[in-house]
Amino acid sequence: MIEIIQNGNPILRKKAKEVLIADITKTTIKKIISQMSEALHSQDDGVAIAAPQIGVSLRIFLVSGKVFEEDFERGKKLENHQPTTKSLKINYPDLVFINPVFKKISKDRKFLAEGCLSVRPVYGKVRRATRATVEAYDQYGKKFTKSGTGLLAHIFQHETDHLDGILFIDKAKDLHEATEDEYK
Image 1: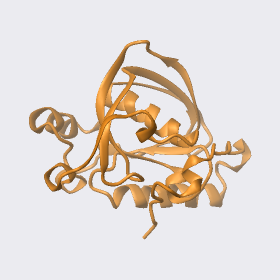
Image 2: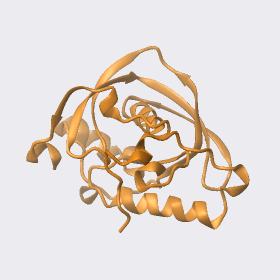
Image 3: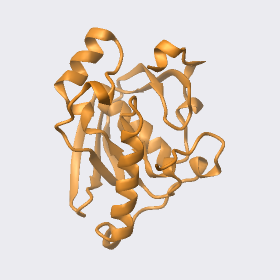
Image 4: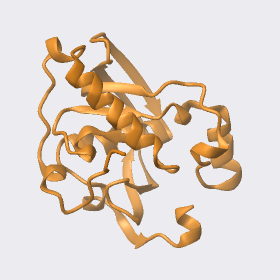
């Protein structure tokens, strides 16, 4: 199993390097994306992961397909927590973002609860833009643009921070260790 790097490892504080466009479809990058996906899906509460979190200082992040599931959104609203991977059948593929750049970001800001696979078991509230649009390359080397609101906009900002060597704890308020119930 791929290890998820924890806070204290210097790679999490480095600005990640851009992936050369010609390298995107090469075996090395495919392997990194596969390892990121494996690490992400090994964590029931994970919704996204950045390459530095598996020890690779490249500008790549993945968003779990479960974020786009209707049951995921409904479960969040009804139970006020995120359903686990085990409770969902994931029909959407993970989204791969290589060399992401913000094209638009709203001035509207909102605090949302946030945690991180690399800062266990700490949670806090982070004030982030409520809407964001990112331009990036996918795993096939095709440029695309993706817009998101709410949780997805939050994820874009959290993962891009990882690529810039910033952890959510640098911005969070009300930091606390999760209780066992919160963590589940």
